[in-house]
Amino acid sequence: MSHVHDAALVSIGPRPKTRLKHHSSDDTLKQFVEKRHDLRQLLNNNQSLDRSSLRSSINRLTNDIQKRLVEVRSAKADQTYSEITNTTDSRRMFEAVRHLQKSKPSSDSIGVHDENGCLIASDDMKASVVRDYLEKQLSRDEQPLEPFEGLPRALNVPFTGGEIRAATTSLKNGRANGPDGIPNELIKYSNSTVHEHYAGVINRCFETHHFLDSIGQANITPIIG
Image (cartoon, rainbow, N blue to C red; front, top):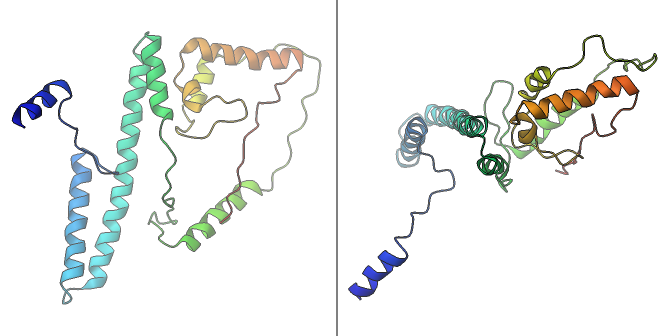
């Protein structure tokens, strides 16, 4: 059997270790998780301690873990962005953009924080917070924009590719595509040629008074709680 084992190691190699779902090599995150684990052990095994204080400490660590996860994921996205902007290899750029888009939606419940930044555990409270937020965003009292009037003409100060690039920095990664099917990452991390093209499209809209129907549209999916 030892010969079979040696032959398998040479031809196939050892099986890589399976990582946990939320595994991370970040040292700070590991410390938070280990400390929370120790506190949970104390909470479960020692009835004489101040349990309310322990629970508060565990909740604070849980919030710290969530914040650190956001920082780690943002750093990973920035690393991929650096790969995109520092290469002319179209194959490598394609792989980097695909990496940003490959994350699958989680089947777990979403994380919602209250106004103090604390994680909400109750699904009913989550639904209430999300509902109130959407009502404020979608039912604001704003005067409608005045229609653009006048003869078609070029703008005195046309849009530039630099302005488009600056605007794309606020686009969020990992969001669903709009009706045009273009992911945010493709626009956000594209080179200056793409941003110049977008600026040209917008400038021509003012020159011709013909506007693209897809501008300003979005796919809205209601979630039934």
